[in-house]
Image (cartoon, rainbow, N blue to C red; front, side, top):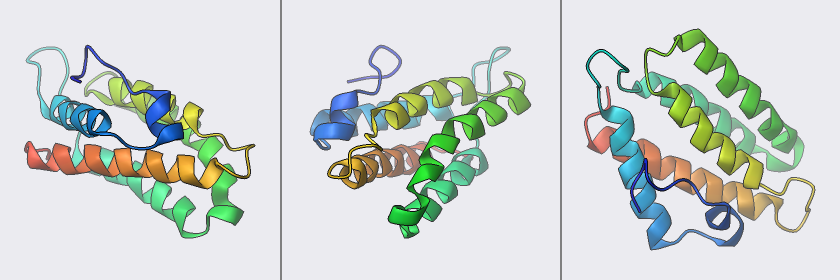
Length: 135
């Protein structure tokens, strides 16, 4: 699994993390660190951390804050609009939105486990972004 050829899969969110998901997160995290001269710059650690902080806030009291998950997409849209296509935030937003869409919020049995799987994939992206020199 390698980004950009492969995209985030709904199955990883709803059925659990696999080696394939970890490999994808590795390639995506690395992709986000690369500058493309004259086109787009690397995603910054602070851009990732801002979003990660919101995920942690939701996780801290999931039963009461789970509706914040639906507000993550507008948060991403704002970040994309603010960026002005200077970094790879659009690609980041597109992939993360797929993960958000895969969380079954209306399903009381699966909502928390879906969110936990999403959070684990996100943590892997952050880890590999840092590993590959994200600034």
